[in-house]
Length: 208
Image 1 (cartoon, rainbow, N blue to C red):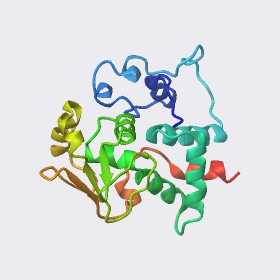
Image 2 (spheres, rainbow, N blue to C red; image 1 turned 45 degrees about the horizontal axis):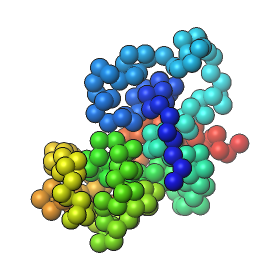
Image 3 (cartoon, helix red, strand yellow; image 1 turned 180 degrees about the horizontal axis):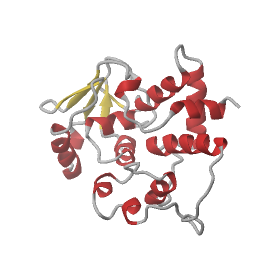
Image 4 (cartoon, rainbow, N blue to C red; image 1 turned 90 degrees about the vertical axis):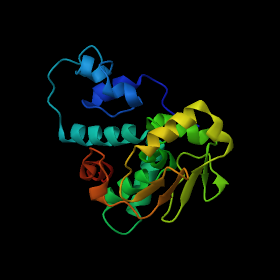
């Protein structure tokens, strides 16, 4: 599985805002962007005039890094969104939100999407009773996500289950902390997606 393995804080600094890629660390004084709020590199503190293309590129990179997908995956998601009825930008965000690793993160069963991706890859979750270890798996309305019985003995999984009990997932998801079971109750609308990106700029970029 291809994935980014470089410094996470550098990505936040490049985009100029927190992407919460390192979970709880992002809420402490150790957060890279709090310590150095300028872009990385030799010329990171210089003033730059950003072109229209540059703005579009930054929005695309921000969305890609926010959800932790590589360029090919993101491009494939975009073209899939163009073939669906409705607004392309909203379709794109909806596809990214429905990724299994993102849903696990939204339930509160992981401190970050990176950790959610790792937990999924290690087979800790079941979708409708079947073990699913593909982070990019798209959930559908009515799908139930549960934790494998064997995984519940893991100290980290126990800690995350306690975390999920205090978490409030988006309205298109439901989570029962007593049964350790989550369910997709609806498709997310744009108003229910808090991703800080302007999807219209991404559509303009790929439409060129």
